Length: 502
Image 1 (cartoon, rainbow, N blue to C red):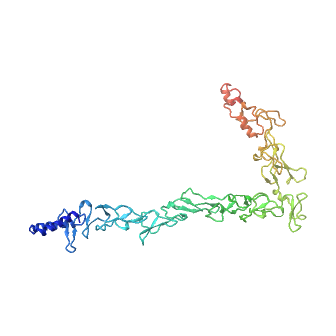
Image 2: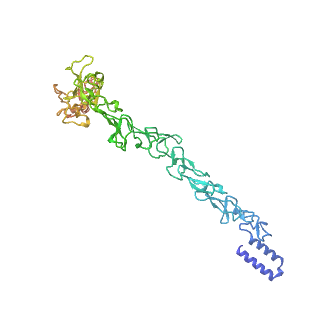
């Protein structure tokens, strides 16, 4: 009750007892003052009949509340708020986000918080059922509280889901919790993404490492040459542990980079998963050879040309034939003419007819020669088949030099055969210039430029010692600005064509 009104009521009561003559007027004033003092807060006391006496309880009930406060008369006679509003400093205010306001009596017109990790979509919520989860959480219906999304699930929030949404197949949060979006679902190792958050397995022979965000640019990686995986959905380079037939590990065993190389000469590589300390290759038995690199089976190990397989002793060994054509009846396993495709020459060699051996024209004899003395032979490490392959001459004015060469540029002879095997070994000698080179018995002359190039007049004295023909051409020759046809058209004004780019 208002203190001032209460004082007035007490004074009127005292006055009425002391001065009965004032009578009914003062009693009526006392009742009105009591009504004004006892009306519920917010009641419109200025309107007649807005506040009435309750004969049962002896109190007063409000029938009409002040319009300016937004309050309404409740069933218990107090001035409360409509649902969606709460009392704040005597007036009704709109319920805030994250809370709900059921409204009703003055005592009920309070804002109630939804709870941790819960909110409302709009202001003015009226019930706990308006409370929704924050992103990354789910609703625990039995308690009305929120709990975080478990690994491999997500929830964008603003809903009342009791279970978070599972990540698409082959996607994972990688143990992460409380994820808010499907974009928090990472593509699992061993998979690649396609459109609409779908994924396909990395095929056998491929792998992909790590968890990554969805992108159609995410691709699987191929295993290094000569290697494979045991299955699809491989997740690491180390899974490329299966050797293809004809390949072995570099470095003696599988390394971190899983690099492999072709099976070397005279060994065979069956492939598969090699032992922990093995490179996956095996030596051909009994000293047998292979015709090329990359042999995959012991069946690829053959008797080398000019030899036969001796069957004496516990372990057969190859032995040289006296002529290379032993009869199989006297030398079992001997090298036969039908095997001539197994004959080979090595890097830096050539193959010529051998006139010292009498053979039918249909099956001539050959012999290998070493290409040196300003010549170069085959570049292949081994070349099979009996076909005439003469050593090629170096370009005029160039020659080979075994003492002053760069092995990395194929200028040096093969260490095993002593023969040169590349035109890069043919270089101009000391003292050679663009305008003066000596080609064997030929008189000195300038570098020959391939048309339409011409000799650069200003570089006649340019030193080209040690250069190859291609390098010298690039150094000494140039594109003319005019040619003989243009020279005639200009009435000879171009002068000597060789000077055109000088």
